[in-house]
Image (cartoon, rainbow, N blue to C red; front, side, top):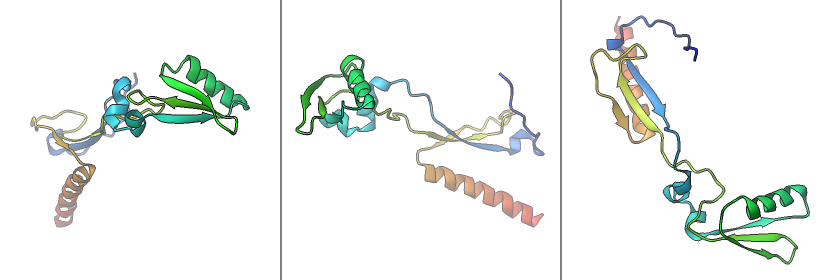
Amino acid sequence: MQQPFRVTPALPPEHMQTYRIVSPPDTLLVTACKAAGCTHWRDGWTTLIDESTDLGKEQARYIRFRSARTFRESRTAAGWTAFRFESGQRCFTEHRTRPEIYAVTGGDFRGNPRGVAPRRHTRPTDWVEDMQHQLDGIRTAQERG
């Protein structure tokens, strides 16, 4: 893999601080609905499909043969197909089950020579406030000369 082009910073890494937002890959799709507090997972849901269209036929075929979900099928007065899904199973939404990690680490891409322990903010507003405080300190130092 090709390394990104980076301009060499004017300051050494011990005078740097890195702010990053990291979102680990979501590998727990089976339990994603429960972890995300999904109301479809909690209460079940009904999907209405118009099988008189090509799209509707494909959607119904997917639900019947490939969705691997438990449902009851019925017809509405308007001629649509109603699929009633039981609660406690994954819906069709890809939920994010892991929140982003708002991290502040010492150093930069060259390393962390002082060994500053990384900090994690639980709220994005705290992370932004921390960064604004650091940038304000840099701005003040520049103005003083």
